[in-house]
Image (cartoon, rainbow, N blue to C red; front, side):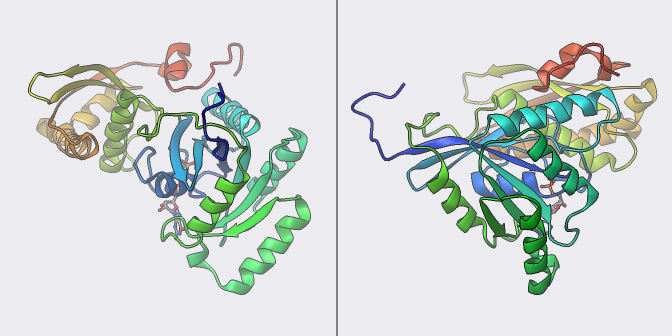
Length: 309
Ligand SMILES: Nc1nc2c(ncn2[C@@H]2O[C@H](COP(=O)(O)OP(=O)(O)OP(=O)(O)O)[C@@H](O)[C@H]2O)c(=O)[nH]1
């Protein structure tokens, strides 16, 4: 609620990052927010939850909605993800469409542009050409012209989310373009994602990095318990759900060496993130068909659409 005594020159609002899987949404989010809130791996379709990060730019508070990749729905999970992505896009004050410079207007990007038109997204849409480090300048201009002929983008940015080029200009424009209004979250809050979920994401990232291609992405991590201790440390208990009995052994590894390595890496990152000592306890459970359980979807911030698939 806006009150008389609040400054009137602040701005705040939601910015949805959309684009094909692997476009660099998580990398950009992490760069703008300056804290690790999303998983960055070489695998596609890693972002499952609608994770948000908050950046402060001049007098504006920019709340990023990192949507799951928008791609063609095949399985039930994919359809929820697509619905969540479009939900995020139409609730936003600004939409940023990330396009990979070296891939250009792929059929996937064209499908997103068609969907923007079809969903009549009223928010200004910025075209963000990412990974400019991978192409020559001439190619960028041609791509920009081609894309702007397809959709009335409010602005075009050419950036490298990884190296940082152009990110400041984008941040400045977002800050100027968001609606005037009081900040939405307290200043010291870097993300509205509960710490438990961040902790689960960290462990899932370590698992993904460690297991490479051995396990499909049917694997989920939940933080069951977070206990504050008197000495300032915290005890975190997490459950790793795998879809098949055979996967349990892979996650554990020979003599438990995989799970130990994952636990060590996750604990180190959690300690760095929280600035405190962490006691991390991991347990692996088999949960066949977890992909079909509504409960799991809701925990991931997705709406389970009964009757689908
Ligand atoms: N060369 C180059 N690579 C980049 C750049 N930005 C991101 N990447 C890489 O592109 C890959 C995908 O980046 P992510 O940030 O995970 O992509 P995403 O859009 O969040 O992907 P999903 O979570 O699958 O939707 C990673 O390997 C990044 O390191 C960039 O500016 N230049």
